[in-house]
Length: 427
Image 1 (spheres, rainbow, N blue to C red):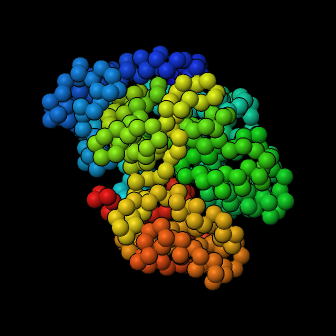
Image 2: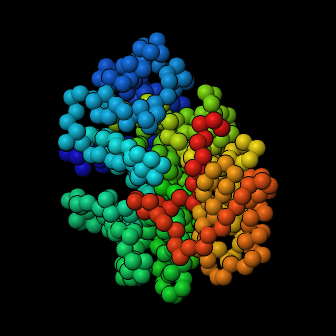
Image 3: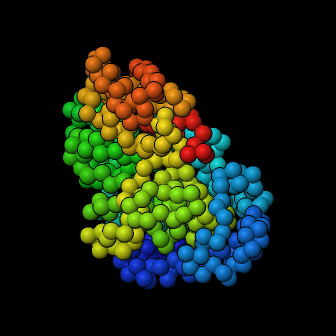
């Protein structure tokens, strides 16, 4: 039953992506009203939040009405899990549990019942199919080993059958796997795809997948172009998180990230105001399908830029122009202004001696730069990089440079390129 339900969801999603924005909005508002009513009746945390805000469920009729409700924070979910955030009639033991990596502190657990998990998997597969994935494609995924599980019956026949490998395997072993399988599709984190491309180029490995999918980290243009040049294949980036699964994705036009509005409401907030097209804002989510553990106006900590632009592909799913990183990946200049992590990438991207780079703001007036060298780093390059960082963050900023053999990944295998240890609540 579960597999048939997944297939049915996927069929409907492949059709709904071509609906008009008006029809998509009607569908989204219908789902929103249903989940709001349910959360009020069955989720103690939200029942209390509605009461505190003086709002009744029937007052939330459209996405615009969500501003009547207060945000839900990560700390609130952690403090109320499971008794006050998971529906009382849900047996957690029968649910799928997902855990954030905890790279910014304490990990967060989110549970999905079978119906929600089936829908989420259909949402996750839609962008792959929309970008050209076929039923019997050879599909290699390098991922967190905790995500490697049993195969479904249809995967045994080769249908949508990803071969999953731990990205902590020796990199040479991973290249051997790719050369042996010669996959049609490779899927991985951008930083790891870069390492695979680098070694493939050094070894002269002939690996030419038809499609490459990246997710879970910021994909900068330098990394994208390098991967595409080595593998002679386009990279299609996807965006999401453990809390809500896949939520936005690049179509073949790659003009931004289509938001899965049949699955989520995405708001972009600065302070308590909705930002306008082209402005950056913190992404705030409302899930439309996970009734086991609904998330309403959940502050994700990620920063994105919405746009009113239309994609040439013809889909009227709204676009997010760019994902700028997590809120705690932003740096604080000495004058107190916030600086996007993308700015730091622009500083180092043309410095050819640098293989990989991580920038850590240890405190407001101290930046640590961790570097993996491609070739011996000259004093001139170090001074150039230091001066550019000071130009952006302030001339009084202290910059320390450290050379490493490799950059440490977090437990999930992700590689954060910019990290701020400064409390950003006041910025």
